[in-house]
Image (cartoon, helix red, strand yellow):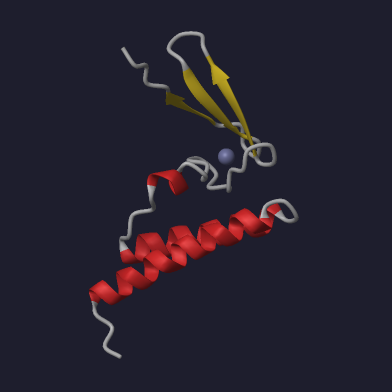
Length: 105
Ligand SMILES: [Zn+2]
């Protein structure tokens, strides 16, 4: 089979998704294994220049690259002070990410 760029990127996309779903399954019993899956997914993404979808990107700590799972490796809170947002704290390194909640007028 000829492996051209499209094939490679398609394979990469599939593998990244698979690695994230494996991380989801592994995080409860072994968070370090989940982090390993994520780091492999990030490497594939960089090498093949395939973007990681936003919803998956939000499950990775920006600072320490740990896999974030609410209640296990991250703390998720809805905050109403200042502008309403969801704060996600990485329980590995303590980095906080904030996601603004859009209001409907
Ligand atoms: Zn972190």
